[in-house]
Amino acid sequence: MNRIKEEIKLQGETITSVAKKMGIKRESLSRMIESPSTPTLEKLSNVLNVPIWRFFATKQDVIGDGAGEQSIVCPKCGEVIKVTTKIKK
Image (cartoon, rainbow, N blue to C red; front, side, top):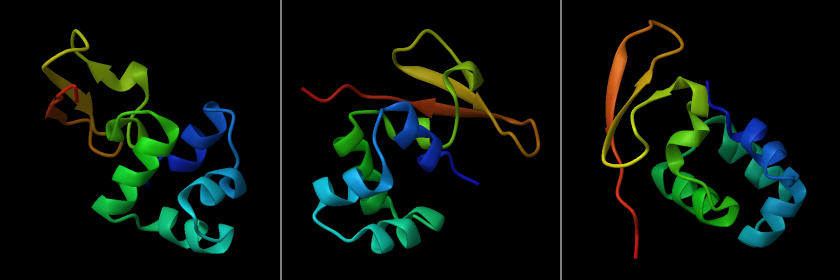
């Protein structure tokens, strides 16, 4: 389960507005959201200006200092998963 729809709403957007920014139809984006590929996640991340991990975890789920290596807690099994972030320049 991903949080893409929730993140779209949190950013003040709609599926229709995001699809328009991506140059695709709303129906296509709706299907892509259900089982997103890595390129789809990257495009959504760029359009919404959020890191990809936000599609799978809330800020409260993330453990760390916000830079470098962090961890998220799997909402299904509770296992801690290490995540490394890089800032693009």
